[in-house]
Image: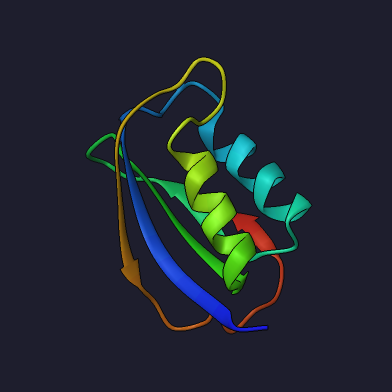
Length: 90
């Protein structure tokens, strides 16, 4: 199975709607490594790393987000695999 690591910037109404906690929960269910944090510009940034199919599934989920979120854009770029295992809130 091929691994994949990406950095994602999610735009829209994604702060103050539990997006980070939802992202952590969804990533952990999939067994992904990485992190998620709010950015000063109102976006949420995350790194997802793991089996390609699970990372792709997580990216698809990010287009919807949690119930109160409104996702206007998901921008993805390649990223080196995180050094530390697990998924954390930053």
